[in-house]
Image (cartoon, rainbow, N blue to C red; front, top):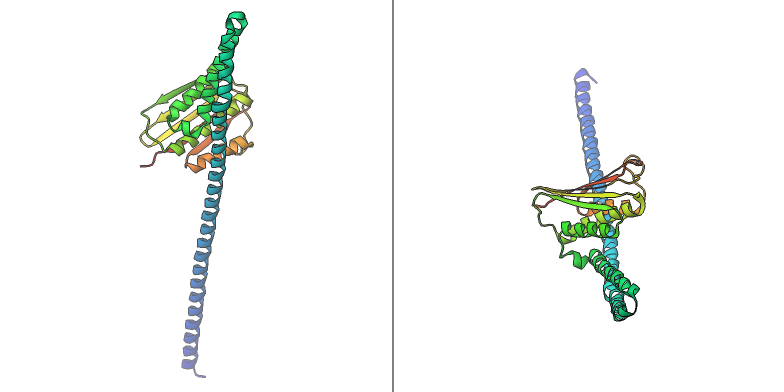
Amino acid sequence: MDQGEVQSFLIVFSAIALSLAVTVVILFVLFQKRKNRLLKQRARDKEAFEKELSETQIEIREETLRNISWELHDNIGQLMTLAKIQVQMEESKSPQLEEASETMGKAIQELRTLSKLINPEALKSLSLAEAVQLEMDRFNRMQFLKASLKVEGASKPIDPKEEIILFRILQEFFSNTVKHSKATELQVLLNYTDSALAIVAQDNGVGFEQKADTYSGIGLKNMRNRAKLVNAHLELFSEKNEGTQLKMTYNFVD
């Protein structure tokens, strides 16, 4: 084989090798793209499944609350109203019965307020600020703690279902405050801007230790899951003996 033939062979061999290398690279790139598409699709499917699961769980809870609300209003409320009427008929016979009648009247009012706050259908007729104010008033009446609401900016319409979810998140925070925090004060701020609603709720209770943005407890997990459903950004800040603060941002849809 002369030198010319060797050069031709090397050229052909190099061309074949280069073609194989390019083919391998192309196949590898295509494989990676397909793999990435499959991973993204799997992630989207998982996210969609988790969202659907969360929505189903919330629907079940809301249906349960709706039934409890009806029971409070229609059954227990009517029984207490009847008992109050019976007591009023006997008031002249005992001064203590007048006090009992007043107490039962207050209890009936509390039942009606509580029934409204847990019933999704009733909440649809209230704005978020109105619903939160009812909770603040109830806490103050029951002397659980000193509660206050401040609203800044002009309120904007929010989808009723999403507004209920925002309120349920706050209710969960309020429940933790009343049950566990030993707080004496609860402050809530609703700040409306053109693009978003910023919500801040803060108590002066015992707080808890937070580790790397991970929180334990079903209630706190429910708050995070609900926030994801309405694409709200939620943060919780707490330190031992320094109280707990919730910050949540809900962006309005144009």
